[in-house]
Length: 237
Image (cartoon, rainbow, N blue to C red; front, top):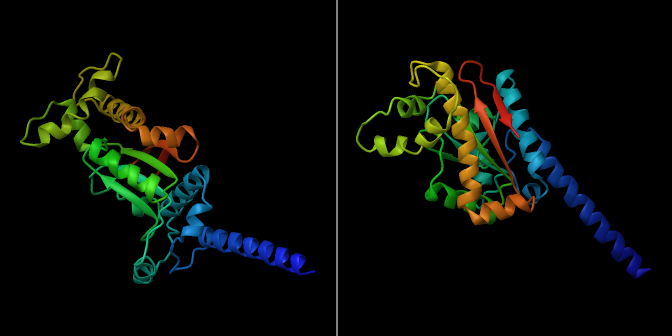
């Protein structure tokens, strides 16, 4: 009888833990912040679904009304983000807004041209392997000034070295694009999309930690493109 009672308690505790985690993931309360249990219950596929749902809310003007200071207090002792976003420096592309996420929900690494180097890759290793994020998104956007600069081989101080990270995409785009400069919007967009795909490849090639996690299904990796005119994000899964 005692063993049966103990077993029932264990089962009930497990069920309770599941529903608490499930509730933390799905509740849209103003002061909700992700917990360790909620983060652990999120799969890479679920993380992607959460971002898609957030972008739909953003587009439809149905964003969650959050108590950000309440979230500040709840995340003060720890953070448990479910995704990590690599995005451009562009002021129109804040991931927290376009995916309708609150404090403690996502890691964000921003650099002009949304490329990765060892510093960003190391940060992503921290975000996933150590901090538990389940998904990495490489987020590009149309009408990107950094891409346009790379297409035109712009020269300006240290920016020249920054734009050099996008040059492989400029060179890799095939097709009879004339001119192959920022004056050709179709060429610029082709380079933008190629840059996202090459960045995803570089992530897998350069980071053994991330590649192994992706191959084991522990984390997901997707590319995405944000439209600065509509607010919509299209994913490359």
